[in-house]
Image (cartoon, rainbow over all chains, first blue to last red; front, side, top):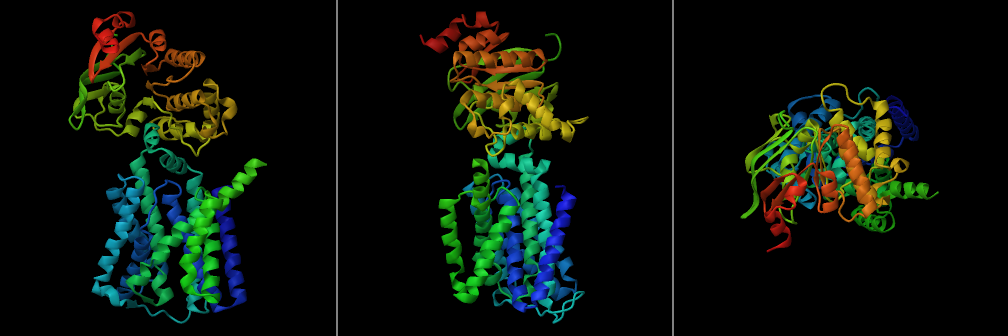
Length: 313
Length: 246
């Protein structure tokens, strides 16, 4: 299937999802659906660096919150439309990704991961002490009641934006997989020294991956202030974003674009259901249990399990 | 040997902390030559390869390739200039099929050079051709983990060949192989040399070295102690002493 056709199919799928959500016409569907979509984007963004090149990033919270806080700033200073704010948030997070990559990509394995963890702490400390965006008190972002363009509740507009971002990132992720870039990423993941010896400019490719991955995380975070209407560092930098965005690709499978989607839909939906039926505090416990289970039963995720079964036949 | 050498190593030095791994190495390799490089374990052979290929940075001296200095260039830039290597312990791309393993240097080396590269629709045929040259044609879709030791060595060489190098450095491609397997690799390297590729062979198996090399260089404790006709070099008293002791 060509890239154009795939993009078309994604658009159709997204239109169907939006159509069904509107047909159900329940505010909660949009609220819960937004979170699942956001996790599809975050999981796919993490996978571009973590799954394709093998560099495990724990600093998801930093990139995500950078997007969110750039919206807080823009909201206070301007009245730009949210799609523009998403681009700005993505750009800011992408630049930070590039800078972080430049400073830390000489580190490999666990050392890179620890450096990204440190980045999350540094950014959170900076935001917590920046009064303009509310500091530790947090910031209120009042959103309009009615959605522009499409009418209905404003949450429908946010849902639609996240759906659009999902279409874009899935097309990008799948495009990378089948391109020269994808082969370069895979070579880096398997053996960086051998990749260099085969002519792969490893540092440049890794920088591109961190910038792209971080940029998409920022874009996913940019609409957050409008979604929650009150944003403080504790929620913007919540550990659950990092844990979920890593767990989802691992559960779904990191080798292909579909893995993070499956993981995010499965885990994201499950968490939403559990939040309503049992308790929202059980969420991380569920993630932990599922991760342990998958490491034992399917170390290559659901996609790995399916492929292994197909190979055996 | 009257033309400028393809590879010129000048006064190259490398130390790890207080340990001098390479000490003022001079080495010229002519276009089209088959050079053997031997030395006891720890004598600096692999370090020399790593300095030539850019995996390690030499502290002193210079490396010239095709008439231009290449010091300071990253490893991938040197590969693009035509300097390919195989690793002592095979380092295949484990999650990629054999054909895809060869696709990487085609995409990133051959197609990154100025001029016409391999068009996308011909890459697959090129990979198949390279695999059949090393006798792995029927395993193109398999993963490296399914290969035997010798097949792994062949894949390693095929990947280096896929970069269409001017100079190929084969770092102990034959260690641990059987007599027949060694012959296979030697004839592969000689065929490659006949196609115009200069080859440096690092090896411990003396039979292979003597059969292959037109010239032999001996490293001992980071210093070059002999350089010349293989039959004369192995009779050199200093070389004999280094290998057999006093």
